[in-house]
Length: 326
Length: 271
Image (cartoon, rainbow over all chains, first blue to last red; front, side, top):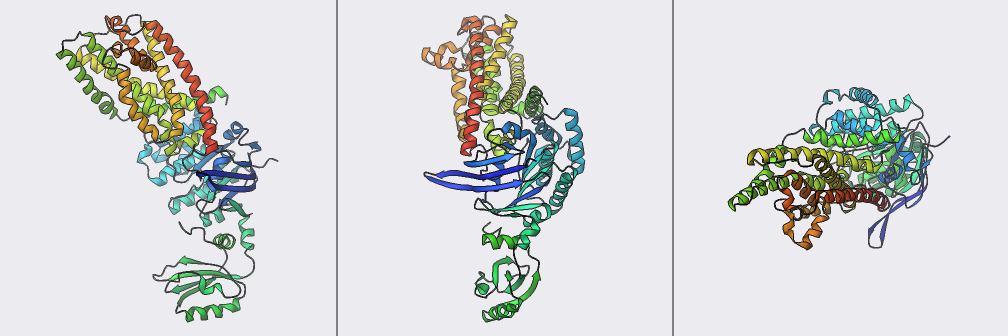
């Protein structure tokens, strides 16, 4: 059985200045099976979009190989393109002068969709995404959310075998993002030959949606497994969150305490406070942490123990938070 | 879906944007018909004040009617990929199963129609306001010459859009630079024969020059007296230009598409 997507030592570099190169992807190996929703998680600049651009035949790899449905994207792009479609978050594609229906129809024609089939599918999707009342609205009059719904319909309407979604819920409000995620799951469940490759930097989205997740940082694949297995890889020990006031500048407070790992700061709801999250292999050490906090003049305004999530995993693997420096 | 079926659907879909969408909001009547009529009127009044023969008024109206085609070539063809890249459309086009040249042809077909509509209204208004007399001599040749003027102009636009593909925003500047010199070289408001030998050679490389000259000879009574070459010869040259520009566009598109993929310049966001 062919894999839906396979990359073999996939590498892409860019010339950025005279004599300088930037490695956007560094020997990435992925194997994505048909029927999977596969997530690629990483911060901005990690190489996620570069990977997608290579897979959808828009960019040549510098070295290595990328196969989509068994076809080499460099050698046989014409065999890959009828099988795929893609949607990017925040994209402004289409023409403002055309209506929603006309825009979706136009893109469907580039895939050769017969008129009657296109019309039927567009009607169904417009209803499914509650955009039917705006079918005749010109695109330049749409809100950002509506426009992104239209883009998402554009991606599904050609019934691709493999759908590439590059941060599809970027900038969408919570309800629309949830609606999109729900539909992606339904769409995959309808046909086990369909595959979705989704890039995101929303941890919750990746956990909710993906069968497997690859974590990319600095162009390198640093982890790849199911969300549950990735969480298990965090190992023994509980995850704790302390709400401290005044706000600590960094995590040095717990750095020297044995058994503490993966410490990072999070904004806290309470003004003037900051959440310090860390993994602790031995719960007995909590007393030491409370004592150190008091010694340094911090008040502990809250304390909780919780299940690890992908954010914790990301910190453990990469050494910083996913949204740091954004 | 057969390749021909895909080709035709894709051409029509891309042309639709201009054929239907481009004419949907009638503000173009003001910006692309009424405003050009002002400069066109100015030239006519100059010729009238100088007591020039009546043919000069017809010559100006026909020149003005050809402006939408040149504007179409520059803004709707040559620099179009810059906008398509900015909006993200180019990524979607290039990742779809249609051949990239289909996209060029769709743009050209739509652009020709859109320009034709504007040109028709300029001509209609010019003829009505200034009582210009037009007589179709050799109608078949006129249709052929005019059609080849459009195909050669827009195939030149196709070739230019492939080149502009790589230059990005600079293309906008090039467009601005190319408007007035081409108006001059094409002899939009005067008989092109007055340009002088050196400039005439340069002017003859622009399909607009030969096309306009031929149309004037075949539509204006006494037009042959101001002609550059015989319309039959101009028709032949325009046919050759169509073929050369079309082949050039196809080859350039292929080369530059591959370069874009190699250098990472085809997409706006490369990471």
